[in-house]
Image (cartoon, rainbow, N blue to C red; front, top):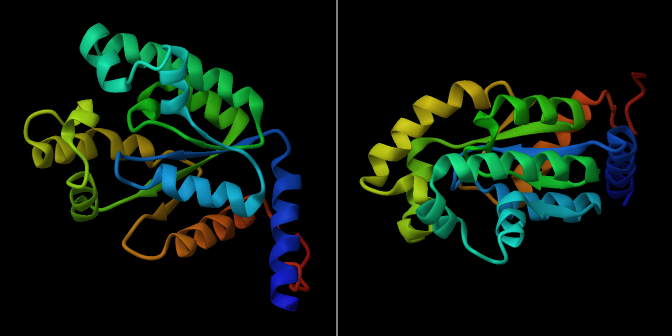
Length: 201
């Protein structure tokens, strides 16, 4: 019971320390940003927002693959950057971003200013296993040979994802385990000691 009380107190301190900032999840498609993000938001009792869903909403329900097909990637990226900039004003929240969003320098700067970024880092095998569960028609960036595309995107994106405030490995374990690790990393980043610790800041 005491442990649960300490955990709740730590989570409350974490939210207080966040203030208006968002917890922003970045990483590749298949890294688990939405599924882990939902659980993290539930644990911290703050809203969960999926940037891709908001982009589709802004296009009257047109799907992201349809936006790519009709207007092309540059149009999509420009709209994505605007949507994320707007969403960052609505914290605290857990904000899951699309795989390519963090490539935009303005988006990275906005996240740095108004959020705390968490890279959900996944190995190639984990990503392949997960994207195979969904049709590549749902993932415009994986058209062609998905394995080759994922390797290419990892090479291109991982150096920039590495600029995130913290990195947590996404792997085949219970989502709760990864949520616990994110909360521990956030607490360390925000200078929050566990309530049972004697140590001050």
